[in-house]
Length: 238
Image (tube, rainbow, N blue to C red; front, side, top):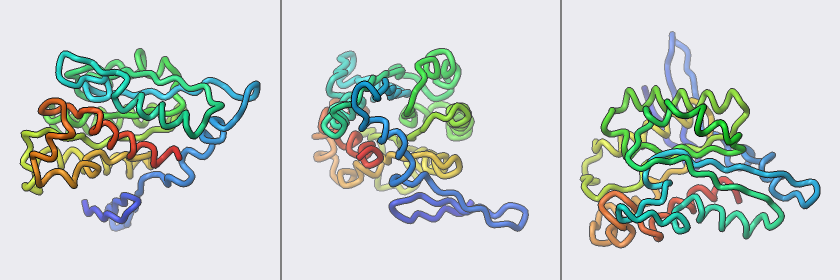
């Protein structure tokens, strides 16, 4: 596969049976247009809007384990930012993330514990823990969840991994980067949204002392780190 990265979109070009197939992530200018229209509506024309965050310990709000700082984790930081823009909207932030879980387990409970909430917008964030089962199994699990959500008309935003301080970021082949690239590929193939947390922290990777200032423990961001992730998400919702 040949990958071409052109900001602000991720584009994947594949040659299949002699034909060139090009996929790109959704367009931030139009992808959530209908949802943003709904969020601008005032009572009595407005309705409940459900934002569902599915993943592992980071969206679940774990800071220094076992402390769970729900209010300062990126799902609720996003809610706070959204309410500044959409003061008339009735929005629920629903977190279905479980600490320590990978995407294979997340896919197993996807219909019973995620889709049951009828998301208007779904976020998926599993790559930190997907290094265990590996790229191939993770790809299958993510793709299954994305396609099921899309079949129900649910908008989806995928998140690349936030930092792990044990990673050698100077190695361009580090495993976390490979998972980030796979999430970009999945977003392009399925033409859904992409919030690139991995790139949001890139300015810190060359200085571990500076990176540590954004972390509460080795693999969990603190509030400043969660703020970087929330800002990536808000690029789709402003």
